[in-house]
Image (cartoon, rainbow, N blue to C red; front, side, top):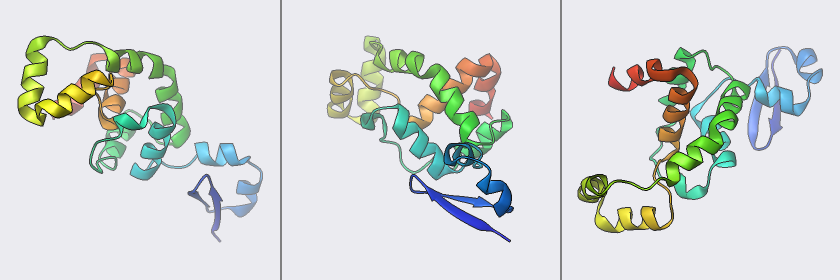
Length: 146
C-alpha cells in the first residue's frame, strides 16, 4: 500500500504509510530520492534567481550525484549548504580579460556585461559540479570529461 504526502509542493511517496507517519515532514523530505525537480527546488532555496538560467538539465545531475553516493534530498542539501558561501564567493570573483572576451564571443557582449554588473556567473548545474569538486576533490572533475 502506497501513501502520498505533499510538502512544500513536493510529492513524498512512501511504501509503508505507518513508517511515514513516524517521521516529521522535514525528515520525509530529506529522505526523498533525488530528482531533477527536487535538485532545482533545493538550489533555488540556496542561491539567487539570477543563477537560474540553465535550460532544464537538472535530470542529468542525478546520476552524477549518485555516483558520489548522494542519493537523497537531505544529503544533497547538506553538501550544498556546506559549500554555499565558498560557491557564492567563486561566483562573484572577477574574471580575467581573456575570459571575458572568450565568453563575450560565445554568449554575446550584453549577456556577459549584465553578468559582470550583477556579479553572477555560474548557473545552478555548474554550482552543483563545483560543489562536488569542493567536496570530493579532483576526482570529481573526471565526470565532466567522461
